[in-house]
View 1 (cartoon, rainbow, N blue to C red):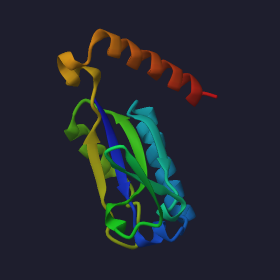
View 2: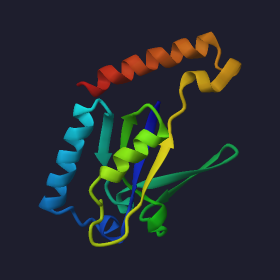
View 3: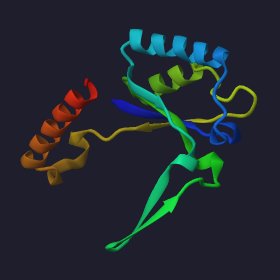
Length: 144
């Protein structure tokens, strides 16, 4: 099973305040543990929403809304993609994580990633083949 582990933003992360050297060191050690255990597949921090945009869809119409976005508690400051045997295992690992915003309350959300078999018969052999091809191409790109 794959899980997206989502680090929620804070007022500081949205203001562009960079993590301390201490926190970067602690997160680096934690990431090493994850990699050594074969858990971590990917992970990145995200810049503040002021440097981003949202695209709203209404039928065929597309509207671009530039950041920043006000609902800080709903924004994402970073993420990991983990491979775990269960949600319980992912929770166990999150509990070991350093507090991403040490001077305030923090929240990390865990969401299971859909796998091809979760989509049932609607995910035809042709669509599965396309998915596999695109994953292989994307993996090649990520290594360059």
